[in-house]
Image (cartoon, rainbow, N blue to C red; front, side, top):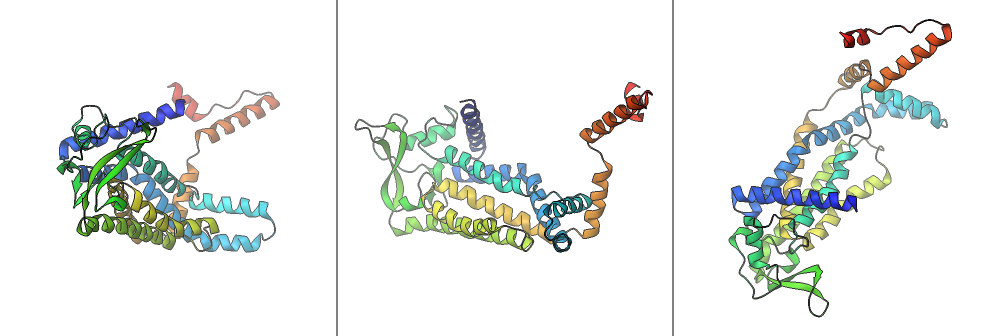
Length: 328
């Protein structure tokens, strides 16, 4: 229950941020683009670390292959030698995982905030954005079909609609948590355009969502060392574009805009990062620098070992220079 409460609070915070940006911009689509940029800027350090980790692994891959040949059949010594190699070059093989793992909870959070109708609502009560959406999707249930508000229109799309609903005239958005008199999910009629021309922008963005996901994964594959990725990782890189291409057909258009913009940012970021590749000598220098800085845990363990030896020899433990500086 605590975890659910924290998650709902996080969604409310994202909703408040969306509403605040909308107050400045006044258009839902541009608001989503601006929010995407804010999220990508916050995640920028992790994104840089991910790409540097892949590049570093690619550089030391020949050394890893040598170790695999040298210690073939002795997994313990191979692991020890590999960890020494990582430490020598200052490489953390797991640092590249976080940006990939973070994409999914962020996508779920964005889906929860940008999907309408929603219960509970995550946009602040009385905010301009929530009021504008409630004109089309009244909180007390559906009435007559309200025309698409200019606030939710973006490049010819009503961002409340999904591509599979485009051009159908009156579509229905359902809230599974709210039931009508018959016990069915309450359905809200919404204007998603009518005819083939109104479908074109929706289909273009769904295709862009697929294409940008595919190209981003291709970039990552080019930076991943050969034979370093497992069969499962390789399969995931191939399946993800197809999976999101299918999702993009059923997601609200606002979420499609978010994911496409996020992909475009990531592609540009990876393009510039992959052009500036570190050398093996640079990695060794960074590794030596990191090794010279002992962690707090390492210093505490050294101090405990010194005190243990001092008690065994019957002499007072040696004062450390940093202790004297701390007293001063």
